[in-house]
Length: 141
Image (cartoon, rainbow, N blue to C red):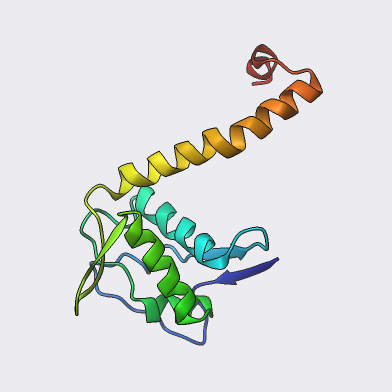
């Protein structure tokens, strides 16, 4: 497991006020189970849902993110392609990438679907194996 903090003493990262990228440094905790481009996409989506980037905000360039994360620009480009295909960001040729107007709704829908299809079955199976009911969990508060 490798942890990379986006802001370090070797590189001063500046954006104009429309970016809000400098407010909270991204922390990437790369895991082997998931491709790096998807992990970067998840982090960028968290920024959008968390309100760091709003609809129509310009996001940092492929090159800037690649430099900050210390990854190949092709990996970041794959992330951007993935997010663009999902309708979360869009490209204005010659200007940069921007958050789509309905990005938050699309991200939440994707995460809900992933939770229901992947996480919930594992959780329910674990509950069953442990003999736990929803009432048991409610009482644990």
